[in-house]
Image 1 (cartoon, rainbow, N blue to C red):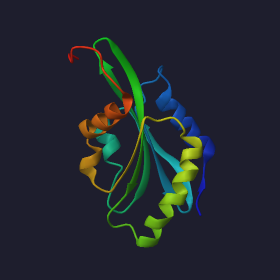
Image 2 (tube, helix red, strand yellow; image 1 turned 180 degrees about the vertical axis):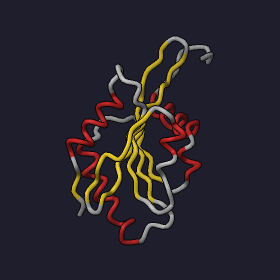
Image 3 (spheres, helix red, strand yellow; image 1 turned 180 degrees about the horizontal axis):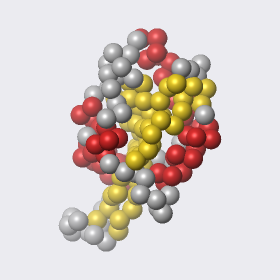
Length: 141
């Protein structure tokens, strides 16, 4: 079973959640059997570059939702299992995810995928919005 660098993961998680920073995402990867904070940033395309066929990755991303009457930040926890990951490592992700969820506790949507198309910004935004309830405005943004 993996271990997790709770301090670095928690600090990165809080940085994404903090309304006073521009940080929009954080990525947690395996370093041997240890899950660590790998990177954070503001650019969604840079976020997507972390998800490769050879890796298992946990991502935490801020998505701005709402309508012209009410904007709010919502969050998604992404579990990525690349298509080239060995079956044994794939199987370990489910137990290792529990370690991540002990630290990353607040999110509107949880996604598990190995298809990069699922992680396109518009698709993640749609999933978060579905989980977030009603919008009361006219639909203008």
